[in-house]
Length: 217
Image (tube, rainbow, N blue to C red):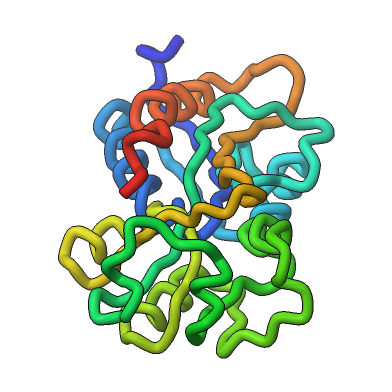
């Protein structure tokens, strides 16, 4: 059935960080394997992604730590470590690991409510009543603020690999014991598959998306 894929559409919903890092390579690989297929992509927040899949507006969804998987199944799961992101010139840039408390002694960019990253960071004691220098619903904006030396941001290495490779950003793992791993999932609706094209795309995800050991810096 996969060999017979010549026409059709796969609808993918994704969070922002995946759209700028992992997804472009996946899209190009899929196009090489199935040149007649079309992929449409919608970028949204974590819970919005699951909603799009559940409401049949997307076949597959990339999301982090969804608040609910009711009616869905996670077909690919990867656990990612959260870290502090900063410019190489930042006073903490030479650290091997950091606690959130150490970071909070400096200006920070904090994720807005509704982002899965915010829910993870809120589990650490001392974050209640926090008044950050910046609060944003965009990981790209927070990473950009960090790159310009304005603050410390927080995320997994996904989405900032190029800036790290070019020496524009430093990623340092957070060591707080109560900090959960950031869990990346590829989700689809429960029930019979019935969509060969979506299954083919999911198989490429399994092959191309690294495990946590490959992304930790």
